[in-house]
Length: 181
Image (cartoon, rainbow, N blue to C red; front, top):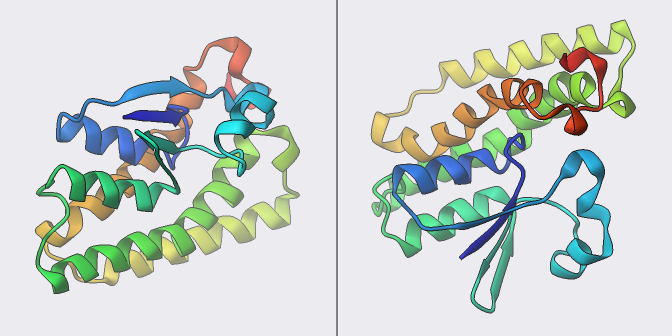
């Protein structure tokens, strides 16, 4: 199986973490987001959405981090993704919450403005985003979840923690913003 990815991508890192935890053999194909490789014709021919992560498993192709995580977990019978319908539904709920609430605030309002100059925000907008992010985090912390329900959803959360560190330690040619130095 081939995974098109970038190590600083918060949507790729959960897949990398699951693959490492479950010792899955993936052929990692780096797509350099910082140089716009994802918009080039070669990658667009592979994934017309021009986004990573993107998985190829033979003739089967799949995008979207959550879908790829679930596919790999099912294909390899990962203990991180429960078989019990209600426990699995709880994991799916958390993954969906992460993708539609937490990630939006984290990436588009907190991370991207620090990494990509085209995403810079005014101080007022940045302050609102910080408050929204804190609200989302508090809401997440108040939701009860057992450890077994939490494993797969937590992989997505954990991946975000390395976002800035990965960007800061990228080779200088991959850095777009002087704030990363």
